[in-house]
Every structure is written in C-alpha cells, then in structure tokens.
Length: 335
Image (tube, rainbow, N blue to C red; front, side, top):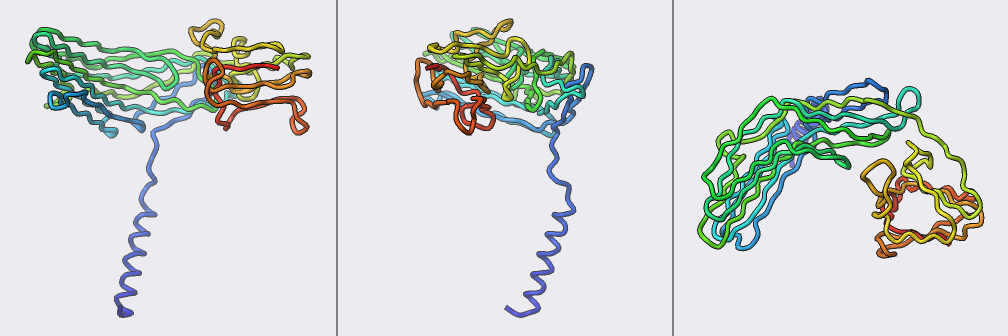
C-alpha cells in the first residue's frame, strides 16, 4: 500500500470518528420523579418495547405477525387460524421512569400512572366454531394491569372495533431506587375448530393498530422509612426493603427460632392482596439464632443458602441488594 493511500484512509477514518462524536448519544425517554407529594412527570417518548407470538401445531393452518414503532408509539398484531389452527401474537410499547428519594427522605409512596391519547382500530371475526379475541391493556412492570379493550368474536363475521383519545390509569406503590416500565400492549389470539371455520383477528393491516400519546406519573402520597429496632434473642426480622427498614408497617415480618415457613405464597402482606413469595430483600438475625436457611422454591426446593451472625457481621444484618437471593426466597427455616 502506498503512503498516499494509507494517509487517505486515515483521513477518512478520522472524519467518520469525528462525525460520530458530533452525533447525539442515543437518548432515553426515561424520566426521574422524586417522592414528593404532588410531583408529576410526563413521558412523551417511548423507550421500551417488545413483540412476539407463535402458532401451535398444525402451523400451516395459522399465520400471524406483530410490529412496534417506538418513534410513533404504535403497536400492531394479527393472527389468522383455520382448520384446527391456533395462535397468538402480541406487541407492546411504552416508557420507563425512575423513582428517587423525596426531599424529606421519603422512600416509598403511592403513584397514579396514566396512559393518555390511546387509540385503536381493528377487526375480530370468527365463523362457525372458531373463536378470536383481541386484548388491549396497560400494565406496569411489577405492578397492576388494566384492560382497555377485550374484543371477542365467535360464530360471526368480522366486527370492527375503533376508538380514540382514551385514557387509562392504575395506582400502585412505588419505591425509591426502582425503575418501572409502563406498557400499552395488544394481543391478537385466534383458534379454529376441526371444521374449515376461520378466525381472524387483525390490528395490523391497512391502518389497523393501537397507539398512545404520552404517559404521566403523579405522586399522590409518600413516606419515610421507619426502623423497627433490632430482633431480640431467638428472633429474625425479614424486610421488603433492602436497607432493613420498613417502608410501611406491613413491609416486615418477625419469626422465632424453630420456625419453618414452607410456602411464602401463603403468607399475605397485611393490607394488600400480595404475598411474601420472592419479596424478602433484607434480614436481621437476633442473638441466639444458629442459622437461617433460605430456599429458592417452596417446600425447601431448589437452591439453598445459609445466613448467620459472623465475626465480620456480628449484628446479623444481611442486605440482599445485588445478591442473587434478593426477591428470590420462597421458603426458609430458622434454627
């Protein structure tokens, strides 16, 4: 290679690198909201999405597709099934927000999350003994979901479902240091019986789709953590908070030496419809306790780990933050 060609190559490479350095970094639509009552956050762009679906055997008698546009906040899905075919396709799009501590040290609160400007347009048809269903919903990762449209068809020609400028809200507890994904999701499912009776669910072709305008997060109330003290002789405290403090009076449990909890799904979080399975994030082991054995699954199943009061940790305070066991305990034994 001649020197001139070599230097020309360097110049081109330098130019490319310079242009790349001047381009804006990939922007995230994520926002951060403080746990101050009355705080509000609007997310106008989409930065989280997904799509997928499948057909069951015989696959020749089922076809489907799904698509997402984050720039336009549009989701599309369709499924068609004939002669014993069956399938379901889905797409989702939304925004992510982060929660930070309030100005007065608040670490938890109640938030109202709203998706506004929701529009949808599609058809559901199912002849004979076939059946089709379209579901449009909003949901929050680790939180509630809410159906916006449930359109079902059975034994009828295609029906149109169309609406615009809708809003949908859910209310849930949020915690500082956590990220939450808010989605608008469309699911198109179709199934046909043994006869040649097609089912066709279409929120995909020729302008058929679902979309939204923006997402708003409002902090309704918030509170600061409370330290309930240390366990006494033979006691162990379990917490939902990774710092071993309580976000509210229901976020901790106390058990005595000799306790065996075989199934945390049966232990209800007071005042909620949730349970303690995969919820423990911290524990305090009191004096006199030899060890706490935790298990991945109910009835002592799966992986196991033992926690004790040690020389390096004489107070027996174990935060599971960043540990594989964080929110992964389904049963435990105190010896």
